[in-house]
Structures are given as C-alpha cells and as structure tokens.
Image (cartoon, rainbow, N blue to C red; front, side, top):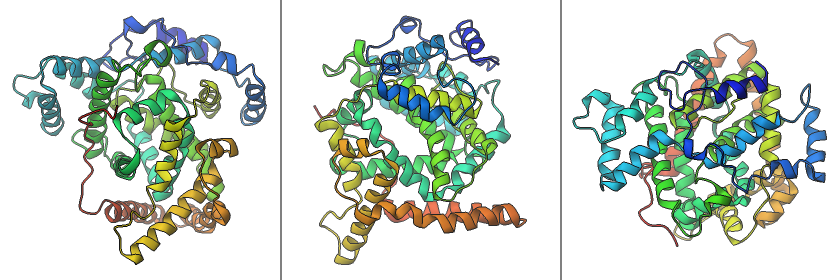
Length: 441
C-alpha cells in the first residue's frame, strides 16, 4: 500500500477502536491539529546537514528518502498525542486519589483477567478492552520470530540500547522527563538501566507477550507508569506544552522503538547477520510491544525502505538542546558502570574495566559530534572494543545457519547469558518499575 494511501486510511479510522479490525491509531481529538514547535523536520531537511543525510541514506533504499509531507506532518502531530485510554484511567485515579488501587487492580487483571476485578475503577475496563483485542495486523509467528532476533543479540543489545540513547538526551522533550523524575541521573542511573535491561529480557522470552505472560505484564506496568509520569510532568512549570507537546508522547516513544531498527543495522558491524526478513519480524515484534504500551504512531513501516525513511525523519525532527541536563544524563550512563568506592578492590577493578569498555562502545557507535556534546572522556584503544565481538558472533551466525539444531542451542545460551548478567548486576534487589514519589525540582 502506498504511503499516502496509508495516511488517508489512517485519517478515516475511528478514534478509539478496540476491535482490532483496522490499522488506525487511537487519537485524542483535542490534539488532532497540534504540531508542537519543537518539531523541526521541514526546516532541518532543507539545511546542509539534512541534504547530506539525505544523500547518505538514499544509498540504502530505492526511491525518494523523504516521506510524503502529509505523513511527516502526522508524525509531528504525534508529539502532541499521549495514550488516551491509559491516561484517562490514570487521570481518573488521581482525581479520586486511587492511584495505588489502580495499579493493584491492573496487576490483578493481568494475572487473572479483567472479570476477576470486583468494582473496577473508571477506565480499567476500557484499558483491558484495548489490551485484550488483537489488532488486525498482528502476526504471532512474526512476533515470536522477532523476539528470537532480539535474544540472538544477547547482552550486546543491552549495551547498544544504553549507549544509543545518549544522542536522544540532547533533545529536550526526551531529557526533561528524565531529569524531572530523577531517572537515569546520579546514583539512580544504573538501577534504572538494569530495570530497562530486565524489561528487554522479559518481553522477548518465548510467548512472553501472550495472555498472562511476564513480558506482557511488564509492558502494561510501564504503560501505566508512563501515564503517571505524563499526569505529573505536564502541569510542571518547566514543561512547555506548546513547544514540547505531551511528555512521553507517541512521537517520543516511536522514536525509542525506531532505535531497534538501528540495532539490527549496526549489529552487522560486529558480526551479526540478520536478514531483511528477520529485521522486519523484529520490528513487528516491537510494534506489538508498542501496542501493549499504548504506542500507535500515525505510521508504522512494513518495509526496510520505509524504515529508512522514518529514520531520516527521526534524525532531523529536532534541534539539539545541549546543556547541563543533557550532559549529566549521558555522563551518568557511563559513570554508572564504574566503582562507587564501597566495593572490594577486586570488584572495583572489575567495574573500572566494564566502565572503560562501555565508554569504548559508546565512542565506537556514536557520531563524533554526539560524543563531544556529552563531554565524555577519551576512550583510548577501548573505542575498538566492539570489534572483538566479530569472530565470536560470525562463528555463532555460521553455526546457527549451517548445523541443524544449533539455532535452538544458541538461543538457549543467549537466554541464559542474559539472565546471568542481570542476576549478577541486580544482586538481591528485584526490578520494580515503580513511579517516582517526588519530582527532583
């Protein structure tokens, strides 16, 4: 289907559709025509950087690199759109001072079904009507295949997802919620990062997104957490809605999902060999994860070419807002791997090595301008550390493809590696995915 046709089909879709019969996204009528002023795609694509980026990315696809203007504008409007179903549920809970009850009822509904909840709070049944409806585009075989692709990257994906977030910290709509909630700052940075690693692990286990699956539960908990954050941050004096849109908007969260497309592409540099079909399955997996989390962008690509077009827009939709907040977030990520002073000499030495390696990975994958903007130190020879993964990964890829039964054994190994890594870093403290009680300022 042509891109412009998809836009027109999208405009004609019912605003809130829980039957899963269409590919439309849920829309808030109050934000339909709202494009926050921070969306600068149309201006940036005409600048020198935009033209150079167009030249470079055009080599990766056939046809024009730009999305139709009407579709690009809709993705800009997504910056002013939240998650109306979950947000209505949480707003009502705040109004009646029942936020803890709301979380408890959601947890019960996830464990035993919505019918098990007596006297559900307003909005809970609508939320689970949306969650329990399978959208028309959903292909469970693709979801499971895509989850297996993520598992194949093992803990390399943890490291990549962490460092590739740093350029996003230069964008105000991204770093402002993190700074105001204290997430990924100071001493909380490593804890939050580990919780996110646990999320990536849980959602990508086999059948994790099915009813009663642990990954499904985690995705919904985070969806509710995001609604709580939106409710808390939007009225804050530092949040300029006309400029920034809605905190954790559809646009912002789709941007996070799109990083998985980059993971698939850049994993090739360190020896992984995902096919285009596997990459599309992986992104289909993320589409359903997004659906469970209330993320339904104006357009979701179904081809490699269209993903490159979306990435072109994502790269150009903002102007960096560098400052103390963005630098603190980026530096906190790297520093979080280092020693705290409370460890034994052996543990401190191990953490110092891990921090140096993370700094090297960050320098290897980030552009020079992004690395400079965060003001990270010299990575030295560690900047080439990711290349040490090439022989092992190439061998694993060849084994997986050529030896019958090897793919399943390698999958078991990667799953075990991820669990062991999490257990060694989380120690005896389970990930909680809990909202902050108080903003930092």
